[in-house]
Structure formats: C-alpha cells, structure tokens
Amino acid sequence: MEIDDFTLAMVAKLYYVDKIKQKEISNMFNTNAMVISRMIKEAEDKGIVQIQIRTPDRINLDMSKRLKEKYNLKDCVVLENSQDFSGDDLVAKFLAKYVMGILPENGILGVSWGNTISKFADHLSYQNREDCTVLELTGGFYARNGEMKTPTGIIIKICQKIRAEHCILNAPYYVQSLEAKKELKQDENNMNLIQMAKKANVNIISVSAFSEDSTTYKSGVITDEDYQELTGLDAVGDIAGVFINSDGNEINWSKHDLYMGIPISILKKADNLICVAAGKEKSGIIKLTVDQDYFNILVIDELLAGELL
Image (cartoon, rainbow, N blue to C red; front, side, top):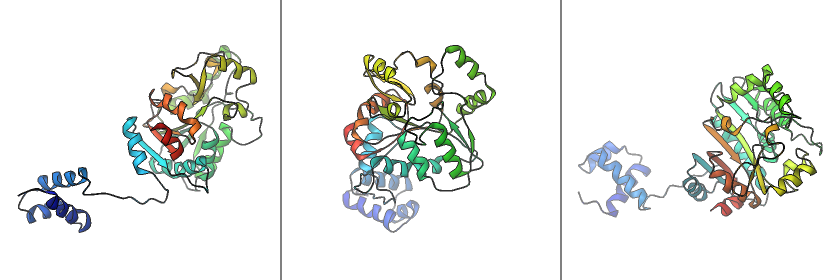
C-alpha cells in the first residue's frame, strides 16, 4: 500500500470523523491495526489532522503546550486575557475547577496564601468533599489591611465551600526565636499537619515579585525593616514564603530560620504542586523558580506566558 498524504487524510477521516475503529480501517486497507495507528500519528505530525478543543474557559492551547515543553512541566494552562476580568480572576476561576477535578477521594489539599489563592477560594462552587482534608501550609498573621486574605481565612473559606476537614497550622508566620519554633513543631496538631503534608495529593502555592506592591509587604507579613534588609540582599521575590535572590537561591536573612511554613522539600512530595500567577510583573520570579523545580504545574494568564516564552 502506497502511503501518501492523500491516504493519510483518508485514514484520518475514517478514524476521527466517521469514528471507525482502527481494526476495521486496517481491513479496508488490507493491512494491520499497527500500521493504521502509525499512519494516524503521521497524519497528526504532518498537520493533516488538526485537533481543536473548545473549553468553557478560554485556554491558549498553543502557549500552554510550548511552555509545558520548554520547562518540562507536568501540566501548564495559559488562560486568555479578557477585558472583563483581571488575570488573577481568570486563573483563580479556572483553578477552582481544575483542582477539584484532580483531587482524589480521601485526598489531601495543601494551600498557601496570596491574592490569587484567596480568589481561588471565592470561585469554588459549593460541593461535598467531606472525605478530603485541607491543610494550611503557612503560619498565620494579622493582616494590617484588614482583608480576609490571611492563610487561616483562606482555609476556612475553602472548607466552608467544599465541606472538607481543615487542619490549621498552630503557629505565626514567623516566630520570635528558634526555641519557640522548636516548641511549636512539637505541638501535637502541628506534628499531625506535617505528617499529612508529606502525603498531600495537591499543593497550591503562589509567587510574589519583591516590591512595595507585593501582597507579602502590603499585608504586613514583612515589616519595613524586613523590606530594607531583603532589598540589601538582592531579593527578587518569594515563593511559598521563601525569599530568593536574582540567582534563584534562597536568601539566608534574619527571619529565614524563623519561618513556620511547610518547607519546600515537603511541598515537593505532592504529585501535583501547582503554582498560580498572573501578570507580566511575575515573569522574573517564575523564570527563576521553574528552573529550580519548585512546582510541576503552572496556571497563568497570557500576559505572563508571553514573557516566559
């Protein structure tokens, strides 16, 4: 049998349009199913077959594929920007459906905090996931802007929406001393949370570019003195509470060892470690962290994707 582009197109039509099984097609062409399978793959590679997927959310499939391949990610989703919604809202709305789709029965969901993750909680639909547990991945703090974007506030909101069990980290974002940290790590609730974190199915983290407009600074997590110290140490941003410099390395600053959040080394144990971000200003911190394998799934908007490509 001569395999030219016309034959490839006919085989592809029978398979994709007419919904005929490969075995039946092989009988029509006097060959075997393995040959037909290779022909279908060749038709795809040559662009004879062009698959289009229409989703409720406007996803840029080309950008998603290119970024996934470029950074060797498990998955990447790029949401098309819209005049009607901010980038944060677009990715948060998609993430609310995406996470519930991949969270298994009796699953463990770890959640960090930030503006986009707070909106993720807002966009969750009411559902019953009583079999699941939601973990707070960072310590708590009092937000000086008075908004319910604190780690604890986000966890409570998520559990109210999906009726899941919650496990709150019984500790502040930063402790006063290493002795206090040692004591808090021995707290029964915290010990249980750390053990559950090692078994998490999905973890959601966010990133912040280092500036006075960052959520970390505006919320009061870091003080003016902290900001000045980190500026002097070449801080470019933070991911999951860890500040990094322009080389992509963690910054060993005065509060580095006083951070009470779940360490990155434990967060990485999850099969699905999702980083969510939007906006061009996040490109620098994303480029640095994606190469350090801080996450394996990326959900972002087109504006940010364009900078990464």
